[in-house]
Image (cartoon, rainbow, N blue to C red; front, side, top):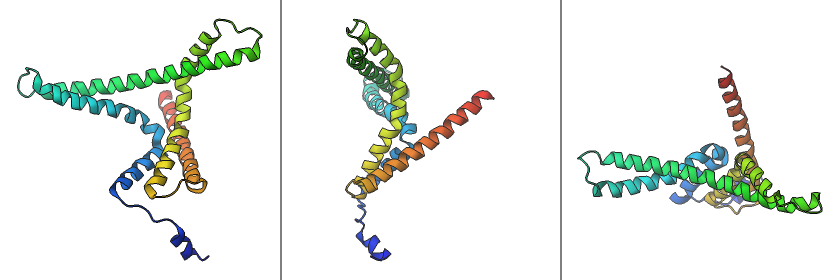
Length: 190
């Protein structure tokens, strides 16, 4: 098959507005997902705070022109609340993984599982959970970005397209993370 036939054999790109928006967001998620994750966690809380504040402000007996303070405060509270809930869930998930790991691993090490093994596993999991989550975030956001990019392009996710996109995303995010870590270390030394 000649090269012109290769282009004709590719599936056509879907260009509906939804797919274009999803494609752009998928590209961001694929190439910088771990970096923009915190913003993605906080934004729903900010939006809910904005909506709640805009509904609440007219109902309060406030001097004219001060309703925006209620809206801004509600948005800030919503963002902080969303961040705190996300952190708590990551720690709780780490504790649960550690608890189950402690219960499952102890019989492999000793004949009788001590009563404190699940508690010790939960504490270790709660301490290591956030660190493991940050490390896994690059892989997970790249995979979600690759699948969303395939959907936006109208392609069936197969190893040659989704797998290659995922691998490129992991490599780009890992390289960007190392450069960012090196910059933070240099700034700390100055």
